Length: 212
Length: 223
Image (cartoon, rainbow over all chains, first blue to last red; front, side):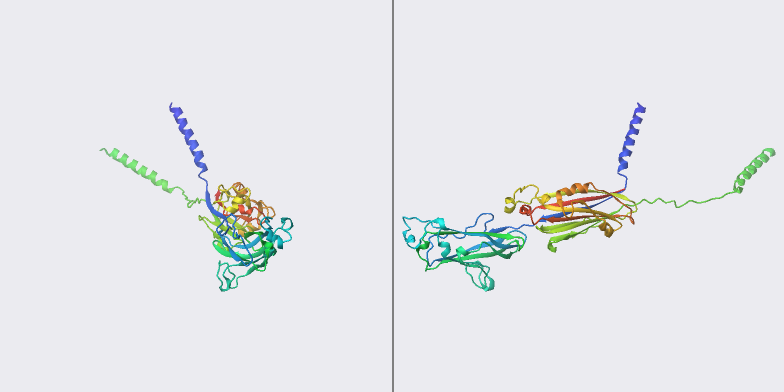
């Protein structure tokens, strides 16, 4: 029994030495932890909407001599600076002609069919699209082009361009600017626009670079 | 006491005295071998972290680190079209040669999913983010007698300048490193240079907004 016990102790000592030996060599450890990449963010809200469509104008029963204005409030809620452009602008006209009620229009409108470009409201609606940022002593976000606020477009709604690369700087986070549009129907316009509708679609793009 | 016994005792004492005294009269030479010294060698790995960034300097932070001091680089708010580098310079300032091994952990996080990310095809919002796929990197390694000569000797060990690869492949390459480093004065320095870029041509790049990628590295120089 003593012999077995002795052998066991010897074996344990041997294993202990072998294992212990691997930790006895020299080594030196250094670290470089916390190397971090964080992607920035660009995010645009329009009138507080983030990802949801923003309808600024819902004008009903417009008539000659009438006017109005609407404003898009643009906020960069991301943490990167960006640039504002207006893209994919389109105007869609419709006659909405009802022969039972719109005979007055027919008197002035030789084409009451949507088949040839729709109604005539877009061709007779005067608009001024401008940066309502209060430049030059104007007042921001008032829907009135005052001070030296820059014009983006002025003319008939139908003739608005498909895009405007404004490259308006909008710092993040929290940078805010306003784009407004006034509209009016000249009092000289006749029954040709009665019942017609014009739909304006605009995409507002916040890009990382001015080249986008 | 008989005189004979006293005389015998005196004779023995005298004899012993003679024998003892005689040992000091043999030839003798003494030499010394003192100051035999054993000095343990040293292994000392000194890291230095540097980097560069194409974006705003205010969004880029370097802690160079040093001997026993963690160093790292932080790139904040990176954006498509940007690029940068991280360079780790590791020198053996000890007197023994060693072998450098690396343990790397890469961590990716989504940090919430914005509207734009949600619209991006393939977004894995709420999971581990997408920088692991979209952050493209190359890794070069060079060995030399100092930083400059090591940089001059760099070759690609992950991706190439014309074909960078996703950062998800970085961990395995670093973990496989088993780099011999000479003692101080020899080829004692190795440089690892990571270049990164975020594509400006991928239409799906909004998918990475606010995502993070983190690289944690432990360098061990062993005997």
